[in-house]
Image 1 (cartoon, one colour):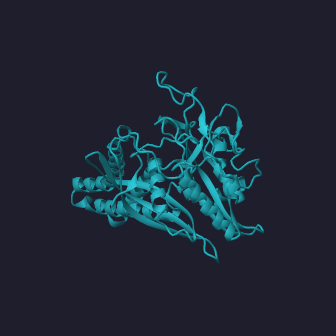
Image 2 (cartoon, one colour):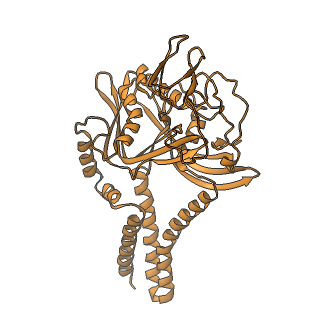
Length: 426
């Protein structure tokens, strides 16, 4: 085959392979976004600006799921920490209040707009340690705006494939119990958060007869444990660079293969097939390796791992100008079991947003390789531990008053030694 013929055939093969590759890895909606990004973005932005009753109204979410997400989104858009849910994980509350205070000090607030939101099924639920847990995820085009108090837009960030995940927990109700033989919390005896007196919570609200404090019956309400916001797919520029490199590789190798046609037909066919098969093998091998590593971890949850990494790294950060802190896509590198512990090595990207005294928000991304550790069998290491001597519940932050089951008498959180949380390993 001559020079021009080889060039033409290689060009056709490389282009066809790229179309099939993109179709296999991404859905058609993403492909259209990639090829017609400006047109598609303008249409989605127009849809985002439509007037809605609430932030996520009209996005096809169930009422329960929509309200759960809006419990966090509304306080962020209003810039008012008093609108935060009354029941939140203590560390998560500190992180959110720090974000709201920084926005208030800088005279800014956040706005979120959504389009094309998808969220399959209802909440994912499970029972663990006397508590019921639920988790939900939504994905779609998300526009994030930084707006001044006067309404001026100082910065817009468009996430073509943004993902938001919430996790909540609550004390198991009698009606929700599946194990009929096991009795959870036979009465509603609690302790007043003001004076510590023991009370019976048998109505919607109870007034403490000793100090007059009003206690609402939020004992069984959902407690917000975490809220994660990250980008599922890399920026368009990075994807274009990766796909261009892949196309160039297939084109060059195929071109060489077709030029070898005059020398050896078999060698030519082998080289062309290798050019096509090698990228496919890399993709298949990478996915299979990730699945195998995940199977080695008992009760693995990527969203929970992301929350643990976020919490561990956020506490080490200087929070003077830190507005938000997020963990993007996680790639497992290795899994090792030593004794009763599991150690994992992972690669991820940490997204940070800083809000200095002057100027626009500054966004930084840092690729990190981390070692994390956790109990190998977390459900087997739950034991009643020593009574906590601290003044606050490590989950909800209320004054610690354990009930007869050694649980927080306000939120019902199991105050026991729990080694199921991922921690940074030394």
